[in-house]
Image (cartoon, rainbow, N blue to C red; front, side):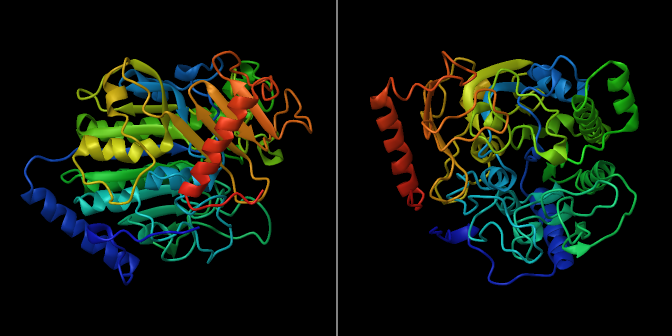
Length: 470
């Protein structure tokens, strides 16, 4: 893939300062900026959950969950019913969020390797943290990263003054060891240095670290990326929640997953309560989104999440893998308790937030489009005429393109398999207005539509400097 370094104010540093020195120097700069620049800009918190199903909060359609804090956020903001993740797996989704660019364009077509020392998202990419730091914001990452495990590609090398969390895809929440395969290794870092909190529940550590950051920057504008690792497996919800769901007859494995969702909801509540305690809620824009659909991997007990009427799950480009819960809230400044049915996309948050905050966007072209007109009006036009997805660069990589109600999937996969895919389904065409469950392949009936959508996909690949090898 071809990448271009952006010139001017967003050019990459030619050297790396130590993590501690970078944090200290940057925070002093932020304070000086805020003190001399007139009215304070709004703070920003982006809450990014991990493998949360399409309808897995009460405000998004769940009937068997307890999620009062997510629901309260929706009540004080705008909830999206047709919001898409940049990808149906972790690293590409996060790259799209951080850069406002499609994951392929951002150099992250698939998941980042879990090996320490592995290069992740290219350092030429300008992250949301760099954009806000350039504007005088203090910046912090708390939680999951999964975008690189070298000094240059870890959070402190990608625009964050402060970082606390794990670098790879998943950890045990008490030992903080990588939860995948051997050799087992510890994965918890503060500003690039390994730290140990054996036995402490990671979501609690996240709230503590975020709270300290908020306290330290109550007088200056801040950007906090609160990247939750929940409800990604291992399912380790609070015992009280698990008992409650089991007593209510919620079956396995939904009970395990539900307990973890309510556990994450409580931590979101504690984070927002800290904002209230500091008197910052009305000065802070809060964005909430899941990175992709729920998991049906064996480590996730083969399920537990719920995509509602949508087909698919994590790894799939059917709706259940990419249609995710999303909210934006800024009390007193944005509409409250409203719903938007227009299409939105994870790449849209960067241009939306820079517009709301009066911050200069990066010079590089963005794929995201500001959602502000949609946020302000339910009658505004959908900002995207076309949306694209692709996982990986292999000859038979799954891809999808949506134009209006029509959606074409190439090389589709569906780990949930409600309607098994046939050998004749390498191109799967649906009309979402007529078949939201994507159960029937219309490719044979509408060859012209297949041809036009496939041409859109191939042109898009050319545009992001990736050639289809299939």
